[in-house]
Length: 229
Image 1: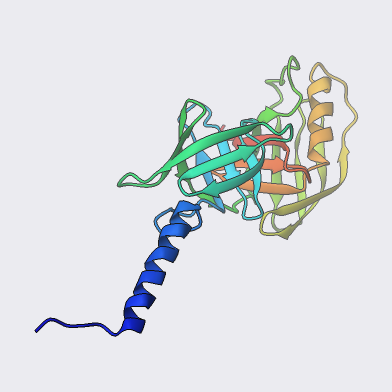
Image 2: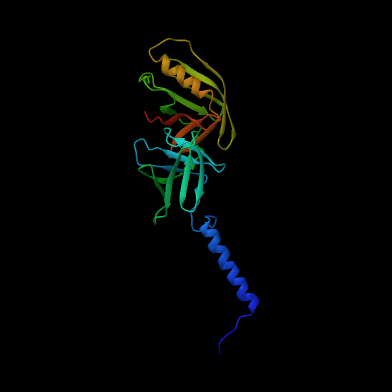
């Protein structure tokens, strides 16, 4: 026997199907799109570069300034707009192992983010504004955030450094009362730049084992890797 659905049920299904079609066409229906917010994306360069997509729409560069600014997502297209209004698109795909973004001639794969910053000796691998300033090889430039004392210590390339720090939120840091010894040396220019960037750090991420420090505008100041020497 052929079943006849009541007129109200048939109209309800028609309206629901139409709404889903319209949402999909407007880029608002994203049930099949993997979540990108709160995740880091790195390419295969050495060192790997990429970006973190914050839940507030900010883009934080990783290891060196690649894209920066604000991000939006429409269906499978990620758009990053920089401070100058220039936009760049990345396409999101979902292979069998994990999602990846393609754009800027690179493939970016999702990379774990952690908060492990304490009691690790960090060595800078990127310093904003360094340009032709050479990082001294000896003594090594290092930094350690001590969990027991709430103080940091290290070497800027010439002098011993020390001061206070506070982790004010899962990804926020405040660095205060920086002091150093008073020796002169060939690494003084690098050390001065290092200290000027360090004191403005307000946000941090640890991505793929590397520490990133940012100012309040989410500009990358310093990237560190663990010192294994």
